[in-house]
Image (cartoon, rainbow, N blue to C red):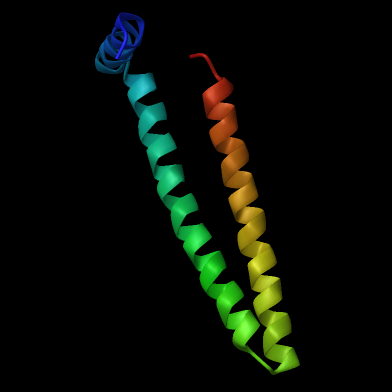
Length: 88
């Protein structure tokens, strides 16, 4: 690791220690990432179930739920991007 990276990491730790808002933002980011991971797993599971289903009504229901999960993931990703852009 270069010295510049080490200093950035140390400054980030110091900021996290001193700034409660920053700690809350980091915790929120971590929580959102965990939820996004779970949603991705759910989406894959639903897609597999949809692919294995021969009943049209059940397939339609799976596709609707997949679209819902996809929309939730998209919103979560946008929130993460906003947290990354926010310099505070």
